[in-house]
Image (cartoon, rainbow, N blue to C red; front, side, top):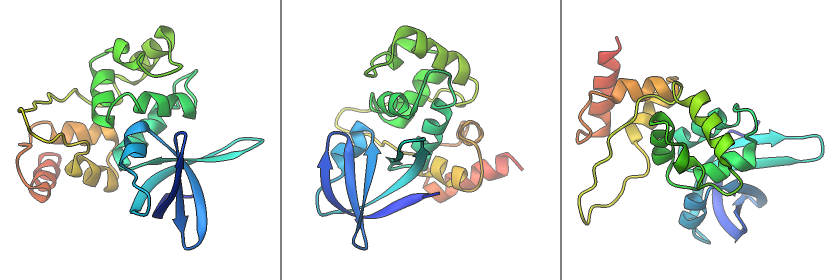
Length: 190
């Protein structure tokens, strides 16, 4: 399987980005936020999910490993395919979607194109205990919004599930450097 694609953005259309990797262009379906952030001519890296069907193969790409893991959880829900999962992740950043699921906020999920109330409720019921605890997001005026948590990404890369990584970081101060947050999370779970 193709785990990630790293290369230059050659083209953008619809919700797809063509990533040129050593002369080979990979068409990668991405969420709205990743599409907007991918600039023509710049180097990008997408963690990918390789979806194989009888008639086609598609790559779905994510700028963060936690977004990919959330996507993989979403497609386990009955009635949610890869396109619907990508649509759900296009509603906001992956942390906002994860928080909505953890808080049983099906109204947030219904904002996704093609996702009705029944599917949104099924997503919340099936995944609320798997995505970890909700995180309180505080934003000060004028502050930039962080769309991915590097400590969360590091714990997932070490083999933690999204839910376990979220729980491990729950009582770790968010203003610490990433390495210190990961170290404290690991010590707390030893």
